Amino acid sequence: MGGSPAFSHPIHVGSPNVGDRRRFLARIEDMLDRRWLTNDGPFVRELEERIARFAGVKHCVAMCNGTVALEIAIRALNLSGEVICPAFTFIATAHALRWQEIKPVFCDINPDTHNLDPEEVEKCITKRTTGIVGVHLWGRPCEIEALESLAERKKLILMFDAAHAFGCSRRGRMIGGFGQAEVFSFHATKIFNTLEGGAVLTNNDEVAGKMKLMRNFGFAGYDCVTYLGMNGKMNEASAAMGLTLLESFGELVDTNNRNYAAYRDGLKDVPGIRLVEYDQSEKCNYQYVVAQVDGGHCPISRDILLDALHRENVVARRYFYPGCHNMEPYKSSGEYAGLSLPATDRVASEVLILPTGTAITPTDIAEVCGIIRTVVHHAGEVVARSVSLGNKGREA
Ligand code: T4K
Image (cartoon, helix red, strand yellow):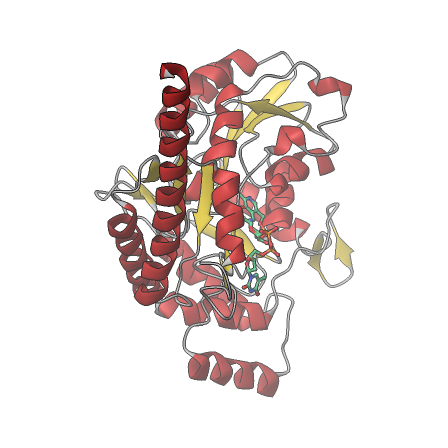
């Protein structure tokens, strides 16, 4: 370390999986030959059918991105007033609610799962609460059963932001069929991507019907608008990418799993750093490699480690620092004055996301782990030296 960076080109968190180019390009040729580029085209329909089957859910409504999919689901489910969600999530979860004139009520997480703490959720319920948006962070499902029984008891709508959880399961059931609806992001940075894209999965026929109208301006047929709609449609090139990546989804998961295991081995003896674990008895996509830097046991902070990695061209990320409650418009809004989310604040200051996916090799991972090991080890020696100097000073 010192001198030129360990990697000559940056290696990024979020570098996309691109799949089989020939199959993708053949589909693009078909699309051009057909001259059907968007608006409920054959690739979109095929993708919707395949995803619904894959997740064992009645309806998949494809959308142009995960954020619009969240907004459309929120409207279709008639959420209003206040909705409880975590602050430890991508800002889109909160913004989608606010964009629909709903107050996101930020609830603390369980520091072990990084997901909503159902007991804290109950404390956040007021007369204005209409629903709960759980987020399956890192693809690790929420405590769904506890949230379901709370929602039922309090007569609230329960939906999930499943942006990270494509291909994951909870107690053997695929994510997609829980709550009233589950929303996926198929953004380029996700294990399964459609360039930009997303979808809402639901078993509710009425909600699915509404969302199909809403994503297409409310058109129920030529010249016939029956609903307040917007443009949330997925295009055919995006669906072509989705169909192609779905064919190799198993291999993508295997690659992530291999990467995850390589990080786990490479970091196992580094003091104060541990990887967030996945439940091996469930289906997991391993799309996020999340290192947690424990301030009490690691001689350096997460942010110093982040700087060191960036200097070596490893573009690790601090998702989802500093938490939605510390970003605008929420931060400066009087509505959130005095809000205290200790678990969120602590976890947001400790996690570091490391690069994975098909763009990274086991050799790259060994190098990244070597950088982390060296930086932490070096800092540990400096701390030990200063402690011993301090002791000598006191003895003299
Ligand atoms: N809910 C949750 C819980 C989410 O995590 C997200 C999105 C959403 C809702 C909303 O879904 P979408 O509307 O996005 O479908 C990125 C993604 O843009 C975002 O989709 C994702 N979550 C979030 C976790 O990560 P940023 O702000 O980190 O993007 P950016 O531009 O910094 O790119 C991320 C990294 O990926 C960089 O290191 C560069 C790399 N990258 C990115 C792209 C697009 C590439 O190497 N190639 C690329 O083509 O948000």
